[in-house]
Image 1 (cartoon, rainbow, N blue to C red):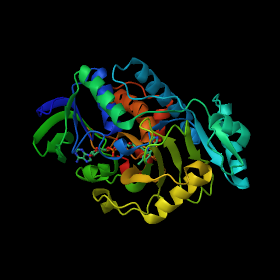
Image 2: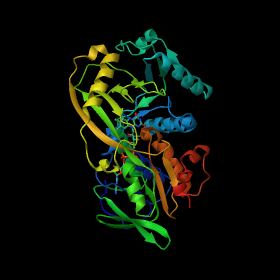
Image 3: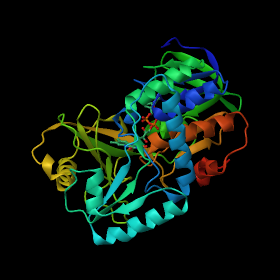
Image 4: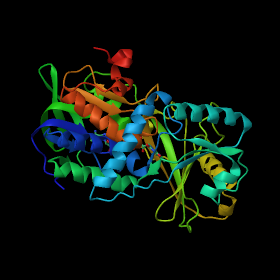
Length: 386
Ligand SMILES: Cc1cc2nc3c(=O)[nH]c(=O)nc-3n(C[C@H](O)[C@H](O)[C@H](O)COP(=O)(O)OP(=O)(O)OC[C@H]3O[C@@H](n4cnc5c(N)ncnc54)[C@H](O)[C@@H]3O)c2cc1C
């Protein structure tokens, strides 16, 4: 690992979460002299705290093509990478507790099947053949067999290792403090340890991205959203798949829920609070997980898996995701020459990262855009049109 500060590069990428790591790796593979600068530790913000499920099920239908491609890119990377990151084709179940969620689930499944994907609705009995300990009072569940999980820290490490094999230079513990201007262009970054001149600068700083872009006089509509996760003490093998909540209009009482068992045996489960409830300054504070969320999350876990009723909680953590008003990433050029962005994740940035990396590389190398790229164009927001 290199922590020496290069003075110049073709591209400097700001932020070493999964998105910045994937973008920087792709640029290096595609032949650009690239430097990745991280303020603290690689993967140390929300990326390392992620449950890192890679799937197509019950996300934005407009993004199905992108998500399918992203899942394939992860699968191919897992097959080719010498650095294992616990890629596991677990499949995903979305539990249905209420009658009104049945119709919602059926709509999702029909739309995804029309796209050629294989999800289906399972009866409780069929669910138990896949997930025997899920004995709670569900009405049904949708099942997406192709979804996978990875170990988030190892996956970020693997991306960085692969990037370095292609000449990527990585610098950690060095916050970017401002953007350099070179005439009318953004000409690189000022960091705590010196400047890096670059023809192109990519902001991939998660919920901190808006603050960095403000340095170029831009208003980027990415705000922090608090996401929390709980982990039990190690358990014998209990949960085989990713167990999520049905994405219904009303949502489940506890907000978004995702439950899975890590290779370590710990059961991990999480909830997020709604966007806009998190004040922008909160991103720099590591809040306590609110008691209500702990209570609701445990309630959901033991409702679904009654056998876990006496399991002890080991720890909890809070991180901040950067979200945009339409819950889609901003990935593309900003109205300041030499400046691009990949941030604003809708809670599933881990999955999308390799697609966004290709998008940014296409853009910076002047290649034609792919149809899905337009979804993420920052210029969809009036304040980011030049
Ligand atoms: C509990 C939980 C479960 C999740 N489950 C899933 C899931 O199942 N599937 C999925 O796809 N996604 C999931 N997510 C979301 C996913 O983790 C995020 O979308 C993704 O990690 C965002 O990555 P990022 O690189 O954009 O952001 P971050 O990881 O926040 O990275 C941004 C980086 O920028 C750095 N930075 C900030 N400012 C500066 C600066 N001035 N100079 C240099 N560096 C800077 C930060 O230190 C940070 O490391 C989950 C999230 C949580 C919290």
